[in-house]
Length: 175
Image (cartoon, rainbow, N blue to C red; front, top):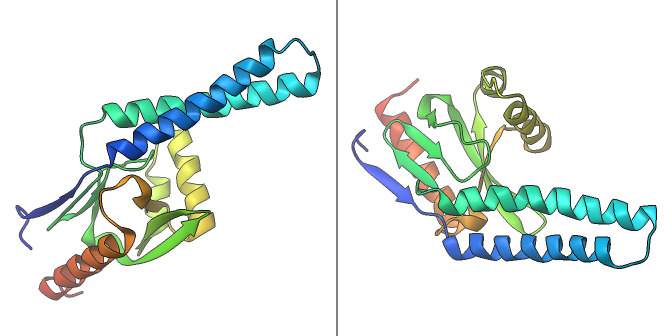
């Protein structure tokens, strides 16, 4: 694959809209809890938690639906993941060792196994993104996990494409 050749995988806007409606439903539930008339600290705690968590998710999904960038771009230089909340630009093929499919509840991810994952964690200056990368690394052995649930491609096909392109790159540029 040449540097100019690329595979573009778009996000599934319908799934993102579904996530927005789910967040709105939980926010409505939280607001209803606040105006219910019964007063208890537990009820206020749950309402606040619903508003905080799903309000944060709602903001993320609203930004995600407005984002015109493709979810994933695969080219001769590497992979650009725009589907995650920690999109850090392009990950070079030279940094990638392999790929693995992981699952959290019903959501599947393609985990990008890196030669030196600590390099990406140490290079992150945004403290929130750094914490997310560390959490991903502790949970899955890599700071990068592409969420396939919002992409217009099934996880198996995406993994096959990524493995094929990595092998192609390694054939052209042996270590």
